[in-house]
Length: 156
Image 1 (cartoon, rainbow, N blue to C red):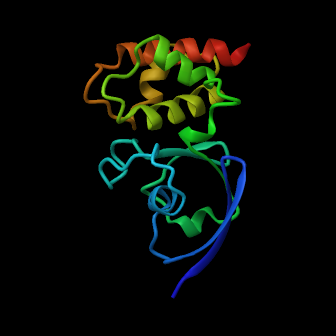
Image 2: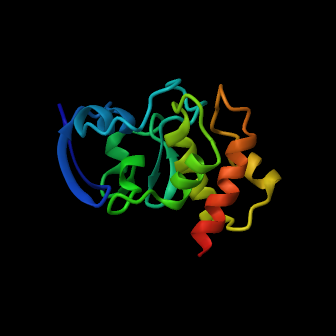
């Protein structure tokens, strides 16, 4: 038994028949070959699988692909425009807001959602807003700086 779905991923319409138990993260990685969305914990705790679903940050390991039917999905691969990094991606690079890079795609996606909701977020709001994303390497200080710089660039 399969379920048909149609959604827009990074601006492109995608249609597929999938097992109804397929998680969105598995569909993105295995069916579409977009491996920037990482599988970290499979329990929704680490945030490495975060994507934007209709503009909202969602942990893709917590929803079924069928639940995203008709939605507009943006993954880390869909942020750059004509080879230019999204302002938040550039800020993470410039501020050294990454180390091993495993959490970075989910962190960037969550940060974009956070600053779209709160463009003038202070350090405390940024730390609170990113609580659902774990980084085992950086200690978060440079991540906070990156989000602040990315937010400033997104306001321009």
